[in-house]
Length: 296
Image (cartoon, rainbow, N blue to C red; front, side):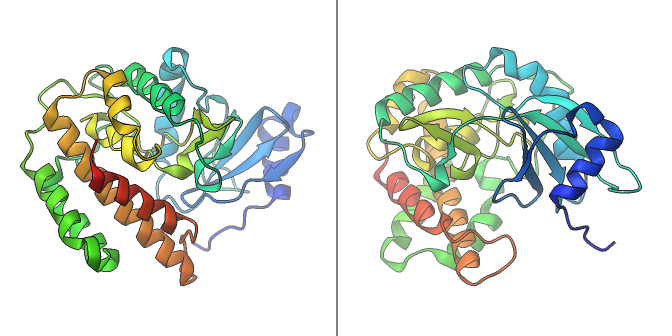
């Protein structure tokens, strides 16, 4: 099927068809987005349009579970308010959600590191509770690091800087050797990187894009101690989080190194003009990698 161009006019037509009371609000494109494309709708809402994602599963997960999770989370998260169904005009799903105010971290920075560490720890403490049996699973992309060696090797071979390659390998090997998560599967955001959190007043102020959420090992989110937070704040984060044992921290550190490499690869793709590439992710990935190599 030919890719449909998503324009402000299309968004307005879809609203007129399915939610006409919202169709008069101002519509503005939000930069970025690959699997889904976002459009601001007035001051308080956004329209999330399925774009490159081959199935609606990620958006349907957000629709089902964010209303359950949002009330107990201490930071704003996008919450569905209206559902858009596939139609002749646009044969994919779309959702009207609350807008989370702030600047994405990949276009901003955290200046209040201690506050951000405490904020992230509090958010993840609230999120990481036992998930129900029907929660989405992600065994393919959220397994123990020992089951992710192919992805790690691909990223490592593509972008690992020669001067720190041995250090990256050591951190990864230590994560692979760490004990697996032995607790019940907990709710995990699953995709915490600089484009999926927003910053206001120098600190974290919201978390977005829960399409990859799953029930499993919290280490996938704990990697954010190095991927998101400024240097020197990881130990404070883990002290505030309280529930991470040594094995979880080792797994999280290795996953942070892998995520740093992934961000660097996306940056390289952006520099080369490849689809989905993000030029500004390269420096963010290298900084995350450096932080992960330094440890807690």
